[in-house]
Amino acid sequence: MRNLINFITRHYFFFLFALLQVVAMMFIVQNNTYHRSFFINSSNFITGNIYRMQSGITQYFSLKSINEQLMEENTRLRSQIPGSYLSTDQNIFTFRDTLHQRQFLYLNARVINNSVRNRNNHMTLNKGRLHGIRPDMGVIGPNGVIGIVKDVSGNFSSVISLLHSDMQISAKIQKNNHLGTILWQGFDHTKATMLYIPPHVELEKGDTIITSGFSQIFPEGIAIGVIDEFEVRRGDNFYTIDVKLFTDFNKLEYVHVVQNIFLEEVDGLETQNGSGN
Amino acid sequence: MDFKIIKHTGRFLIMIGIQLLILNQIHFSGFITPYLYPLFILLLPFNIKGYTLLLTAFFTGLVIDIFSDSPGMHASATLIMAFLRPAVISLITVKTEFDQDIEPRFDFMGAGWVFIYTLILIFIHHLSLFTLEIFRFADYGETMLQTILSTAFSVGLIMLAHILMGTQKKTKT
Image 1 (cartoon, rainbow over the protein chains, first blue to last red):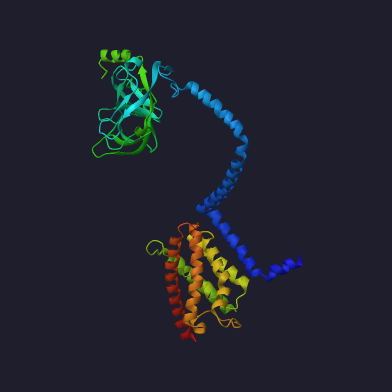
Image 2: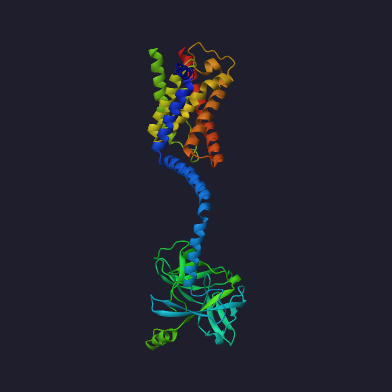
């Protein structure tokens, strides 16, 4: 004990310095929000890393049960999806949209010809009238909207891609249901443009755009893309939104063709009271 | 003895006053602020007791902190400077024994020695201060630039103060 006291008194200069320095640091950390948050954050960083390391080790022990869970989930999801890519020809799946009391039929097809570099792009599917495909049916891919069937022959059908100057798809912003129109202005097959969203709507980069379901061609809620950039151009009274498309049009292979069974009924009704187009 | 206390207190008040009222308002090109108050620590006599030196430095910094709303930063930086002061003095001085109650001034040590002494300690002070202010080691180039430029200004200011005090002393004696 006496040695310790001797040691401290001999080096009191350093110990006093250290003590006062600790006091000063306490002042700094206690009174400055930035420094405090930095301290808390860095300690969180350290503890967080330790926890991550720990879970990195322990998660191997639960791999088996996680695999089982995933298998179960896969089976459940597989029984829910409207179309499976592995299924063979001629299969027709029905999908009841209970929210709107509307029934859609899905047929799967393969893209056998496709283009993305022209101003007006088309693609050809390996199924046609014999398989139940009719003009004006919607075409969707694993990641979202692809196009609309234009012409059908016996065994093939021609699809107007989303990347076409005549293509306009009724779309909405997922988070607030504001309605707009998706169209393609050329050049970049990964981007489309969304128009007619009024400027009072609050947008954010990364908001998801989905189909509105108003056109009777696509069901509601099919993904299209996410907002990449937006601006109100001078003289316009709506946003011009750049949308990054989910679908990579350059590598399409399997697609679904959507048939709206009530299309004629709705169209007929709308033509009757003059609201149709 | 009383005269000495009055002299140091007066010096302390004048330097703190100049620092807070004038120099703290100066921000050359946005981020260069000269500091005069470390001169008070630099001017303490050679034979000062270690604990007096450290406590004086701590409280000087603390007073600056209280008035400039930066709790602890100046106290810490000034403390570091005071802690390294004896080491720096013995490093740059041939004769290390100071039995007299003399101060590091032009009169006794010469202008060159005072300049080196000031430069080293002010650099240490500023480096500690700006590092504490930024509180991270990223973008260290910017902190270094700020330290070097502010050190240049502070050292210039302190040398000026030395010259002013030196002449006063000479006229008095």
